[in-house]
Length: 326
Image 1: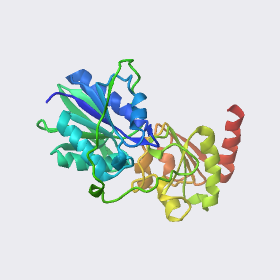
Image 2 (image 1 turned 60 degrees about the horizontal axis):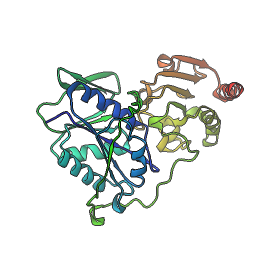
Image 3 (image 1 turned 180 degrees about the vertical axis):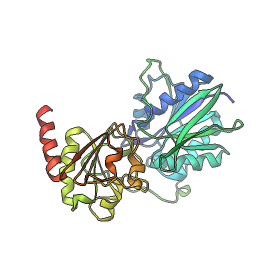
């Protein structure tokens, strides 16, 4: 089996998610060391238009599928298309983002094609012609390295924001339309409407900057303080499990072991004590800034910068100072 790589390009609102270019860069790591070509698969409404944004990235082929049954995501529909492409083109490696969609789609497809699944990886390298992946375990306390045995197709999901995005090479790419072959009765749950989070902020898992609030926010209305700062920084807004359980924030923005795993360049934790469950979701952030009035809060042990004080005083002051330099 050649070292051909298939990149699954996840879309939202007709646009490719940022992690797609990170996957292309990962694919280059594999093919430059082991030979082979890079293909991409885009499924969903707007796939053909989205393909134009990566046609100069040195891919051999971009397959697009956007007929009616797969306009919106469904496990059964997308898994059938991906399965068909893997069986037809026989790539050695299939790369997906470690997102909600990727975590649902990749294992199911891997099972269908008798493949290998490496989940939630943060690094991929070639060593003596063998692809080695690195992933965290035990809530990020340890890392393990894995490599496949044999020649089965290998699915690798990559955490966003861990690998630099690929740059365009100027090399053209063939864009091929592919019929999904999906019938309506194959899909058990139909997506009727997709409602984005308010504010139009970046997705938590791909955001470069995140401003998060904890139980100390006291009320959902107080998250407006964080939202104002986040909008200035082009950031996403997150929350701890304590804030979500208290009803201050939606579960969709929960960061932590039972929420979303994030890896931003800057993570600002406001009124978050730093329980191990929360740290498991953000401890790999490049820079962590903690604001907490308790000087003994565990979050300060992991923070690069700490401010001991009342977040209701510190955050507005920080917002005003940033406005001065914007």
